[in-house]
Length: 536
Image 1 (tube, rainbow, N blue to C red):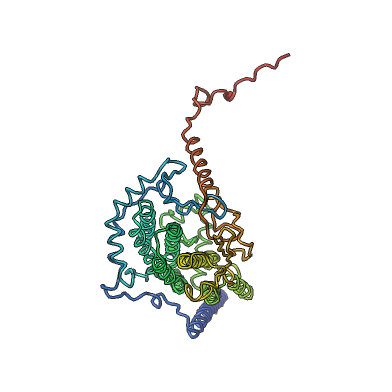
Image 2 (cartoon, one colour):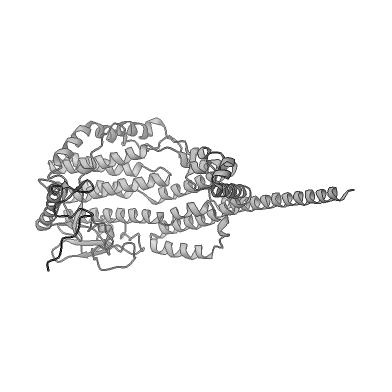
């Protein structure tokens, strides 16, 4: 046999051995991932999207179709006319919005006419929404198999409905329609209680809706029209507005969807951009690769490198990448379960940090997709903790007002609420300890959570890190202190500040004179003008 033929056969053999080795490594990586998934399933974890799809209830029990039919016809109130409910005007002090004869902003001197007109226009639709929400369940018929490509237009409508109900309560309180205010608040809380959709984005929208309803619940508690049974009904709705189980279902669905994305991207790498994945895979509209070799060789090199990397990821790297993703998600899931079971964000974060520190990460180049998905998980659990802490504060505040209505004063301690008004002393979801409470010398109360720093500052509502547009944001306080009503002087000072902003915005700009280039204000020297001679 001639030497060139022998060399060719040797090279062919080596190539085949290389391909065999690559195939074997592909199968080993695939098997290791499958074994890890099987172990999770054996422990009771549900990894597929189908495991978490809610069953559609009978039509007569499902509020969703009629709810969305009415919500789709609601009209939007312009952002500049949206009322600031429970607007903080000083540390720990909020303006009672419905008490204001005029409701100014930094743009308008009084937005009440716009709010009232908007609510009255939507009254019939609010009645339709209330009728739909009499049903026991609300499940939207969604195609969850589309994973993150699922379209969710109903979320914006659910948020709009919560906001419109909240505005209706404000208008009802202002106009003395207390029966309507009572009913609208009850329905607003119920709308969030029934919204149990197992999607992370849906639960985040739900938390936004709960914030609207929490604000207007605070507003309603400042009215004297209620009897103790009225507040009891609100409290029952808030207590039934469970967040933990819905959140666990949502993050389990999230895990199933991410695994689906791994499968889709392995099978069709060109779909990566569809899921928002930043890859170097050439897009159809990027032009001819061979043309770019001549015109833009550096771009062609990057494209070729990205192409071979993505091919390597689909065949080999994606399996350890997905396993790393699942390992982190499992810590996340177990940490959330501990947080909900023990009512303590602090304990759960410490546990998750220790667990993640014990994981051995694969090399960075193997964490292509997981490196883009994992950062979104880091702070999401704090959204749940914040919403649950506020919910517990709201329930406790209602119980405190029930005690005052029945016994003529607020209690000396939260334990005095048990068992007449609460089943047990409420716990702070941030650190697992009882919510902090103090009866003040003036007969009012101070109720607070320690907040995200887990440090009890004695009910100090001083804010840090709040935005300039909301400098007294109570959830940016050293402690999260349930607001007390601001006095007339504090409200007047805030309104004067808004008036000054309106005046500054309405002040006409200085007149302009011809200059270079274009127009320049008077008194400014145009560029290129010689400096005047200095006096001798």
